[in-house]
Length: 247
Image 1 (cartoon, rainbow, N blue to C red):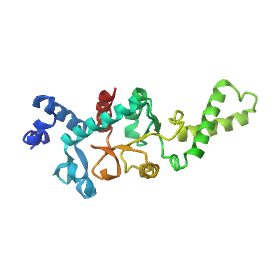
Image 2 (cartoon, rainbow, N blue to C red):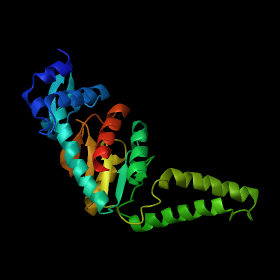
Image 3 (cartoon, rainbow, N blue to C red):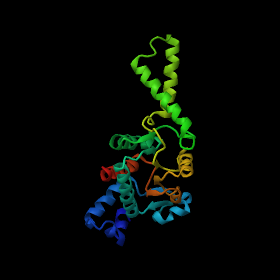
C-alpha cells in the first residue's frame, strides 16, 4: 500500500491540526512525503529515545510520524519567533553540503550567525579567546578591502590573502557573533563535529534547537524537530516552513 494511502487510514491524520481541514492536512502530508521528511535511516540505527517519533517501519526503514513533525515545527517556530523578537543571538550549525541552501535562507531572513564548514573546538567554551581570532579576521578582511596592505610586498600580500582564505573557512559567518549565542540551532546532531557543538552548548547552558533523524537522541536537545535530516529537499522543507511561521 502506498505510504500516503496508509497514512489516510490513520485516525490521527485528521487530528494533525485543529485549525485546518483534513484535506489541507493531507496536502501538507503529501508535500512532506514528497520532500522525503518521512524517511529515517535503517531501523538498526534508531536511537531508543527516538522511537516515540516513529510511525511505522517499511522494508527495514523507519518512517517518521509526520503529525509529530508538524507539531514540533509549530513549537520550535513559536520559540524562535520570540527569540528573534527579543533580538537574541542565534548560532546555526549546519555544515553538511545538503543544508547549504537552507543555511543561506535562514541567514538572509533572520540574520543569524552560522558555521559553514566545520565546528571550531572551543567556540563556546573558550569564546573569549576564539572571539579575538574572529576580530582579527574581521580587521584583516576590512584592511584588504581598504587597501591597507598596498605598502607590503607582493609576497607578503599573497601570504596575507592565503591566511585570510583560511580564516574565512573557519570564521566566515561569525562576524556578528560578538558574544556567546543565546540559542544553538543544529541540523543533524550526529553529523561530524555537531556532537562537539552540542556538548559545548550543554556545558555553557545554551538552549538547543535541532532537526533530528532516527539515529539522533532527542533527549540531548531542548527543542527537536523529527524529520529526515540527510537530504536537501527535506531540510529545505523544514526550514522554509519554520521561516514562514517565524517572520
